[in-house]
Amino acid sequence: MRSGLVSISFRNLPVPAVLALARGAGLHAMEWSSDAHCPHGDTSIAKSVAVTTKTAGLTVAAYGSYYRLGASEEQGLTFASVLASAVALGAPAIRIWAGAAGSAETTPKQRNAVIADARRILPLTACNELLHAHPDFQLVVSYNPGYQSMHKTLKPSTRQRFVGM
Image (cartoon, rainbow, N blue to C red; front, top):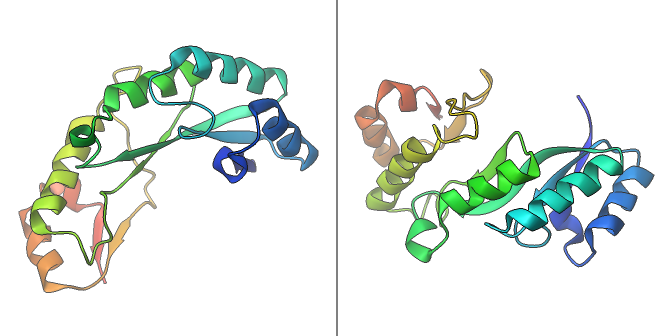
């Protein structure tokens, strides 16, 4: 395992300064943030950041997007723009958010929108390959009768990623 830095920790610093800090700390990889260093859809900046990262001797581990499943498309942030930036950056992974609210505040309609959006975007990658979660990955949902009934309505391929506590 290689250690790295999430660039949002230094949102006010330019890319070269963030890379200098990462190298000085002996880190090897970067997750570049969409709201500070690699804006969604700006592929020219993403390509430049990728080159600068490689030149500094680090790798791009992920693209830290602020895409929220079930909500971002309605607010004007398309997953296509997120994916375009991630591809230009050479990011092997994209961090996304499971909805726009905490699980206690999320309505059944919002939960269904999160699940539908996840089903829609997960197969979309630069190589047209389905993104598979690590076998140890689980989305843990607290015990709640509402979640239990929702769990029963999920397709088996989605249900296997949920665990009731």
